[in-house]
Amino acid sequence: MARYTEARCRLCRREGVKLYLKGDRCYSNRCAIERRNAPPGQHGRARRKVTEYAVQLREKQKLRRIYGVLERQFRNYFEKAERQRGITGENLLRLLERRLDNVVYRLGLAASRTEARQLVRHGHFKVNGRKVNIPSFLVRVGDKITVADKSKESPRIKELIERAAQNTPPAWLSYDVDAAVGEVLSYPSRDQVDTPVKEQLIVELYSR
Image 1 (tube, rainbow, N blue to C red):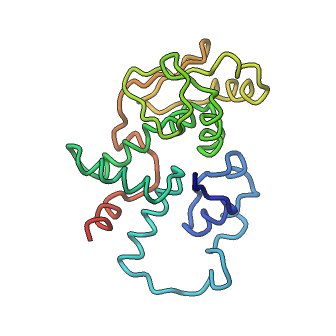
Image 2 (image 1 turned 90 degrees about the vertical axis):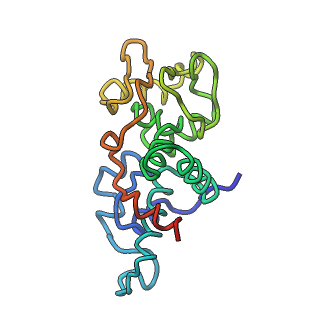
């Protein structure tokens, strides 16, 4: 399966904002945005004419990179959002938020979406008692996310469970600290998604 293997901090610098792809490092003074906030490359600081298309494209790339999905995956999400009732941009964000790797991250059971994706692939989580190792799995209202019993013996998983106990999930999710169980209470509304993106620009890009 194709995946991005280059330096992730370059992506944040290219978009000019923190995408929180490196977990705790993004909150420290080692963050690339804090140290050198300019696009990567020899001409990163050069002035460039910004067209309407360029603004729309950057917004799409930003959202795609935040959730760690490939171009074809993103296009499929958009087409699915377009077929649903309601506002296409909000539908798109709702679909991306419902990904299992994102839910694990939102619950505090991973330091970043990248780590969450890796943990899901390795079979560390169950949905409604069944092991799911597909990061793009879309959760539904009422689904319960738990850590696999064998995984609880891992030092890193133990650390993440303790981390989740200090985390406050968004209003559409709940987390039982004692049982270490997350639950999907509802589908997220736009004001419950703190992703710094202007989704209408993405809709305009694909409407060209």
